[in-house]
Length: 239
Image (cartoon, rainbow, N blue to C red):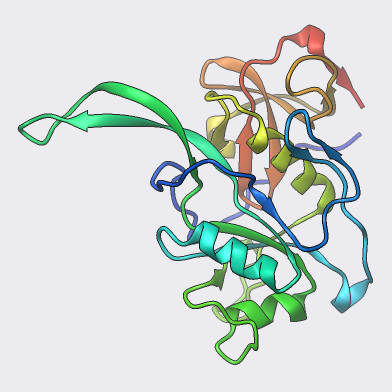
């Protein structure tokens, strides 16, 4: 039995609903996933390579405003798997007095400033350091300050393959009720990890929470979380 996620202190995380881009396949890599569910466009499995300092894991990188997709594609051209999550956001028309009016429509946009890369630490460093041969301008690590280390010694935020798979499953599903989540806004039902057995989120693993007034499943870690839309109890089983 596993406990639910522990909230970390994560810096430089911007709101999800600020960018504009035409929807497209969010995963980009010269080396494709081992298997894919093409019906839902969801990446399912990733090859495990190496260990220790050379082990490839998912790093969360911060791109400058409006450059998430460009950074993802540049990383892909170097032969690495990269991912930008897209979520729905409201589009409104300003009134003549600069005030917002009724919602016009919901469109999918990239989550602001957020790009993931699956790489070893040394490989990821080459994209974010000025001296790196793969350096991309204005691309930096997210840092987790929970460890209380001095500035400059913090560890970059990473996400395990298992949680990244669940994060991508949820983000890639076409559902306008999928949202970014903060742990303080979620009421955990218990500490049991569960799997969704039916519906569009079938196969997703996470924890049952009450968020936005509904029962949902939360996925992710290291301060980067998503919640599904409403999931009935009949569609959930403990694992």
